[in-house]
Image 1 (tube, helix red, strand yellow):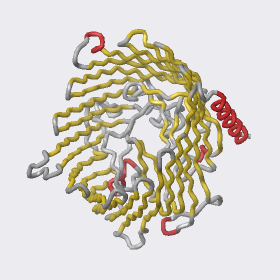
Image 2: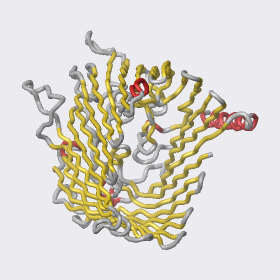
Image 3: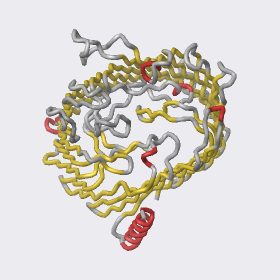
Image 4: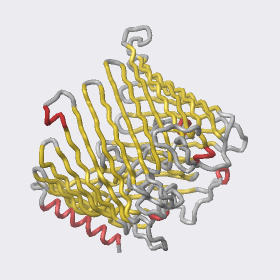
Length: 526
């Protein structure tokens, strides 16, 4: 039945677009990722009874003047490896109507929203991880003055293909002070409050069904300097995650960025205490969150630097990150003819320090337990008009026993990566990666490599492999594939193995199983 609804909706929208093609704008996108699995006992993977899995998302939008309307249809037949099995099926899961006129912006239906840095609310979509916690209800944005924006939301969060029985409501205000005083600097203040209602049917008489989080924030931008901070308090939120504790939550976030000529400096400092803000208290997973707490660490892009990624510990965490960028002047001894850039990044994550009461921790503190530390140095150099290199060194320390399971060791690793790009002609480009990871703990040493050939502007081919050579029975995690793209279509086809481990996107991580097989991905915009 749902497929008939889907086909009917598509036909109606296409007919509407054809009828009003001179009055409005019809647009959309289609995304599909499919796997065909093969049994591979060397990586402990047995293909399922149905070896084919496919994720499909169709988005359709229509806009005319002050009105925008749209829908999103999703089909998981079944979901591909790593995605939650609860997504299996198909349904129109997102539909909305939005009206914008002068100082009023009203949305009815599904919508995404973020208050401040997302510490108390972020309804968003991340297709790489299967996250979509859009709200189904209404949102009103009101701008009564040029320097003031007020946002109110009410809705039920999406939960896989359905919507939760619980509701979330909130209001947020953003004030731009520089507009008022006509100053050269940009100064902003903001405040927000979000509450969620989760009905309780147990025996306790004082169990909190309503949980509230409140934040205040400020930011300053002046020339080369940008700084911002946000402070949050959260009422008691007993759940499965915190063993039904009535401890209140809080958070403090400070960010800063300074750029001048060829020099750049970034820092971030964050404290978290009982900030796991769940829509449903009985479910603790990345698909059930109301707020957004990505890891405060560098997001690496190479195979071996991603073997030990960090995932935020929302119960208690102190984290800091700093980065220095410098580009040497062209023509200097260090810069050479084309210039050289150096980036040094450091991040560290610890627990919070306990107070006199062993069950309590202090928010503004750093404990003795090290969860994660990453010191990395990247040197980018252009040698000629056709040759460029990026050299990376990373020292990563990872408490796998605390972050994954007690049976694991504390891992100390060193990784080096050489990334070389060569443009042979206007049409042909080559890129290669050589990577190595050393550690005496966990699975020991790894080696990896990648070769990519590009035929501009449409086609590219690649082959990669990563091998753990400490143990003779370890498998090669090889992958080969090709990709095609133009202004409207992206198509890729590949074959290979995926290693079991954490897959991260935007600082949020998901544990994915190993698999072997073919994969096909298609993205179309129209």
